[in-house]
Image (cartoon, rainbow, N blue to C red; front, side, top):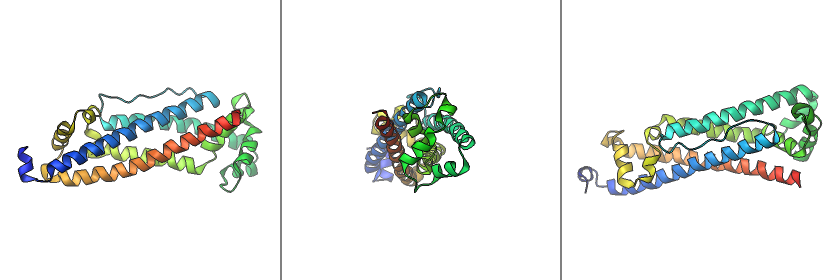
Length: 225
């Protein structure tokens, strides 16, 4: 038994809990990398973007990996903003407003974008129009992406951010030592509660982000049939 266990009898249970939380965090990070690369691929193929895929930095910290995803999403948002500005410029104001109207049918929105997408991209495909509608004409999708960025930034700025990704695969004692090295022992319980809070938010944001990207790819596939 570690010396700290005499002072904090619940530490063995906390070790198990920390291990579980960190593995879930790693899973969420991995899912976010995967979803971001899937979105990058869709934009490159259908909107003519030239975005590079991203990879998890296995020897980096949680913050470094959060920052990699954030930077990739910011580049994606910059490309989507260009498309949005082009749509606003080419469409009649009433038609552009319809793209932002949540009550408007998706098929109608795709038809609207189809009118000008060839001018914007140099070619006209229903798949490209569908991507534009899903990612530019959807406040829901935009909100989901923004929420993920916010959560990633909060995690990177928290105590979690300083822990290395590689530590997550080294076992309970290594993880626990890494955390003890970053905080006072008396703060450990509060730190774990903070991890739990961030993880709950991250899991929710990551799942919604993944589902939104999956919906985009499914819509594209339907348009290509």
